[in-house]
Image 1 (cartoon, rainbow, N blue to C red):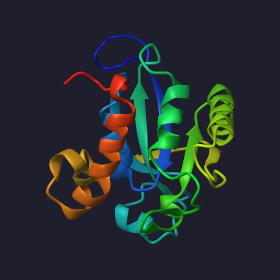
Image 2: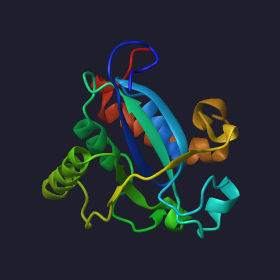
Image 3: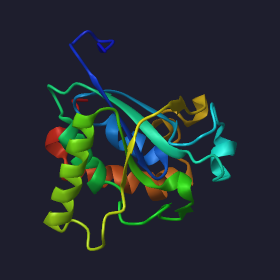
Length: 186
């Protein structure tokens, strides 16, 4: 695929790290990322709504689809950032959000992505970044359904909301501090 800005070839990563508002906010600041779309993946129901996914019965996870320029940020680096900006040690949970829709997962688009995902998971585990065992799934990508419009760019559009101030803002601040050299120019 070619990116809309015309700067060259892009790749796609599909990642589930709990609430998609948090994951979208982090990756939106990363240099080399062309777009981030929140949505649903990993389930068996076509075109689910947010309400459907919230029941936990569709099998979908809240996820983001990240289109990135591999000349600016590698898939390896995307995954390393992903695994250090959410808790990949809690099955079906991120903070107060509980259910299979909040699981940690990497939905791979190719054998090369699978190999990279497995390598990065091992690197993060071996480095002792997290004290508990990583439970992030590595699963073949099948379909992605974009979330409803009101979920898109949620953090930027709703900074006054309590969830944004109490949950998303601290994650974004931690990301910006930890990866200051990787931020897109403002």
